[in-house]
Amino acid sequence: MIYVHWIFFLIYAFFVLAAMIAVLMDNRQPSKTMAWILVLVFFPVIGIILYFFFGQNTRKEKLISQQSMDQLTKRSMLGFAEQQNLVLPDEHSVLIKLFTSQNWALPFKSNETDIYTDGYGFFHALLRDIAKARHHIHLESYIICDDPLGYLISDALIDKAKEGVEVRFIYDDVGCWNVPNAFFERMRNAGIDVHAFMPVKFPAFTSKVNYRNHRKLCVIDGKVGYIGGMNIALRYVKGRNGQAWRDTHMRIRGGAVYGIQRAFLVDWYFVDRTLISNRCYYPAHDDVKPNDCIMQIVTSKEICLYGNALLLAYRAGAFRYAHSRACRSRRKTDGAASF
Image (cartoon, rainbow, N blue to C red):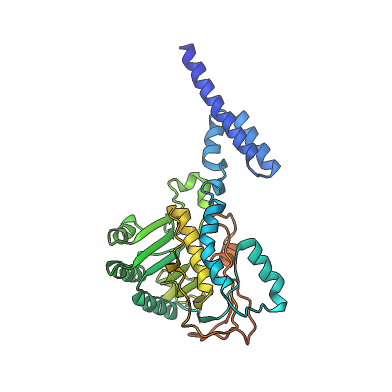
C-alpha cells in the first residue's frame, strides 16, 4: 500500500513541476508568476486544479505559424502590389505605415462605401447581396440570435448552400451562449460549414471565457465586404425598451475587401485549421471606378484579452482615416459618416 502512495505522490509532483515550468516559461508579469508558484506549492491538489482552470495561457493554445500567416496574406499583398498610382495622405502616412508594418493592414485605394446606422438598411442590403452570391459567402458574427432575424439570415444562407455556393460561418461561443445547438446544426445539415470560436465547456471555471472574437464581418464572392458593429439580432432592427438601436456598419466594394477577406480567412484557419488562399477568393475589382478613397482593415490578434471597447474599436470595425473630399460615401441613413 505504501508504494501506491508514493506512486500518487510522484505523479502529483510531476504535474506540479510541469505546471511550474509552464508558468516560468510564459511571458507573464513577475508578480503573477510568483503568485502561481506559491499557489502550486502551498495548496496541494487545490493549487493544480486552480491552475488547470484559471492559470493556463490560453493565448498560446492555437498559434498560427508564420508560414501559414504568410500563405494567408500573400493574396492581399499581391492585390496591394498591383495597385497603380497609390498616393498616401501625408498627414496620415505615419499611422498608415505603423498599421502596415505591425498588423499587415495594407492600404487599398479605389473603394466605394455605404454607411448604415440602423438595422433596417444594413440587413436589407446584406440579404440583397447574399441573394446575389454565386461563389462563396463568408460570415462572422459575435452574436446571432435564434429570433426571426436570425432565422431569416440562416434561411438565406441555407438557400445559397443548396444552390452550391460555399458558405462558411463563424460565431462566438460565449456570444451565442443562449442559442440552442439545434440552430447551428440546422445550418450544418444544409451544407453550411459552421464553427464556434473557442468553445467553452465550463464557462464558470475557465479563463477561455475572456478570450472572445467580437468581429462582425461578411465577404460575398470576394467583391462585397461588410464590417461594423451590428450583430445578427432583432434588437438591432426593432430597438429595445422603446428606443431605437444605434450602431454603425459599412458596406465596402473595392480593394479593402481583400483586407476583410484576409481577416476572415485567418480566423477560419484558427477554428478549422483549413488554409484557404486560392486566387478565386480575391477577384479583381474592375467594376469599381478608380478613386482616391484609401482604406485599411486593422484587426487585433486571433486571441486577445481586452475590454469590450477596445475589441469593438479594432475587431468590430475598420479604423477609417479619410479626407472629407476623398471618401464620399452614399449614405443610406442619417448619422456620422465615419467611426
